[in-house]
Image (cartoon, rainbow, N blue to C red; front, side):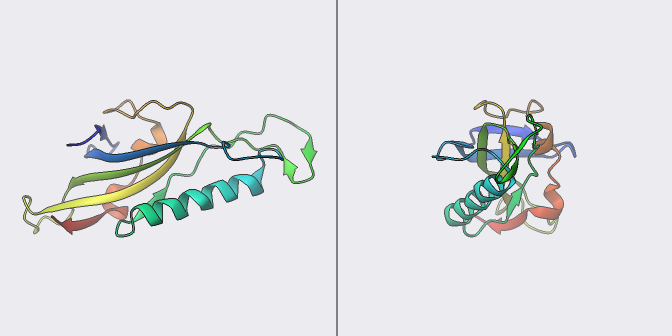
Length: 143
């Protein structure tokens, strides 16, 4: 049973099987949000997703980056990502029409950022998440 269903812009429905939320800057002990810090946050999320879902392709939705301060510190200008980092494992019908629809599904792990801990639902998901090109990124697997 899925946690929720998301309808992609392509019209494909994908089921969210696993969802992990984390605070984007929850482990930051010193410094400030900037490009080097954000790049480290993203790399850590990619490693986490690879360990959690080793047989699934992983896709990072490029996060929006805001620059609220016009002054740069020692590591460059302040660059802020949305406050919640999400790692979700999605499943859908098989991509290959020759695969038995009872025995095959397609899967993709997606990393995205959003401003709240709200679970995506149907067409009410972050726009960038709904734009994922499932057909190009997901992979079929046999149940």
